[in-house]
Length: 245
Image 1 (cartoon, rainbow, N blue to C red):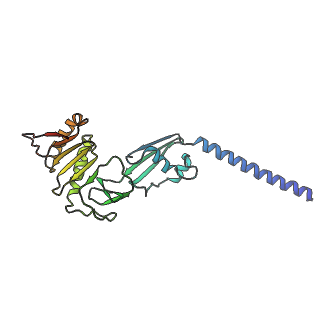
Image 2: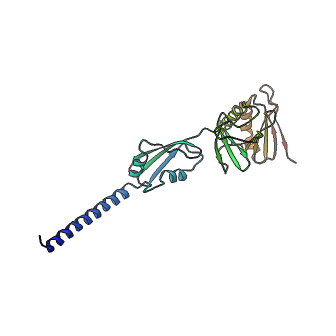
C-alpha cells in the first residue's frame, strides 16, 4: 500500500470515529432532553420543602434526568440527611419523579446554648441543629446541662417524655400549634401562644382540657393574658381567663 493510500485510509478511520462520536453525542443529548424531569412530587416531608428535597435528589451529574436518577437510586434509598430516616425515589415515567420521605420520629426539641436538640419519644437526641425547625414545639423547663447524641436527655423524671408526646399528639389532633410547652418542677404544663399563656396543670384530663382550648382558640386570637385550665373538671368546669394589664 502506498503512502497516499495509507493516509487516505487513516483519514477514513478518523472521519468514521468522529462521525460515530458525534452520533453518540447526538443520541445522548436526545435521550437527556427526552427524559428531563418536569414533574416532581414529594410526600411525607415536614422539615424540608419540596424544592429542598428536589435539590437533594437531583444533586450530581445530570441529576435532572430520569434515566440518571433511575440508575443512581436503583434499589437504594437516600440516607444520612438531617431529620430524615430515609427517602425512597421512584421514577414514574420519563418526566416524573416521586419521592417518599420517612422522617425521624421526634416529639419536640429543647434549646441548649446555641443549638436545638431534637428528641424522640424516649427522649433520645436524634438531631442537633443550629436553627429551629417549624412544625414542632420547643420544650422548656427541663434544665438540660449536657447531652450525648443518640442517648436520652438527662432529666429528673424520664416519664416526662411520654407526657410531652401526649401533649404534642393531642395538639396535633386538634390542629393547634403552640409556640412553646413549659414544664415546671412539678411537671405541670403551660402552653404559650403569641400573647396568650394556657395553664393546663397536670396531665390529668389532658384531652378534655385540649378540647376546651380548641373551642376557645377563636376568642384567644386577639387576646393577651392567661387561660387557666388547671382546675378543669368534667362535672364542674372551672375555666378562667385573666387579661394582662
